[in-house]
Amino acid sequence: MPDDPIRSSPRVLDLPPCATMGPGTADYQVVFVDGIAFMGWYGNVTDKGIEAWRSAATRVAERARGPIALVTCVRESSPPPEGELRKGAAKILFDDSAAVSLLVFEGTGFRAAIVRSVLAMMFAIVGNKKTAHKVIGDPTEAVKWFMDASKGKPWRPEARDLRRIVDALLNA
Image (cartoon, rainbow, N blue to C red):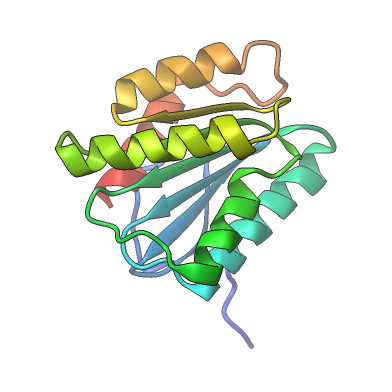
């Protein structure tokens, strides 16, 4: 019997009861909450990780039957994706089914600030204009922005649950 992808993650995360652990490896972790697909990147962006992320967004969209939210948490030490993997990640980040797309790129140094600036420019230039996009480094600010952007959405989580998931993904 093949492994259940929902139960096959090597990580143990402190998640709120509303969250379901998805597939994961040493490089990434997927978490689901009704209407929201979360992705944590810890290492190299891989084909397997991109496919897990795409599947998570698709799964959430099919169940939500309406607009969804994407929350991506990236450790500062994670290397940027290259070539086709970068294109695959961009397709997910700019997906039309997302009403809200938040990218939390941790870090306080020069490199982290540059990466956040480049990503924010990409969202502004290439992003779907109907989607609220944001790139933030501070988890507290990220949660506040997400809660504001999610007003009136059917999938709006509790702020404390959202913060707990973001913290779990960044600190796994």
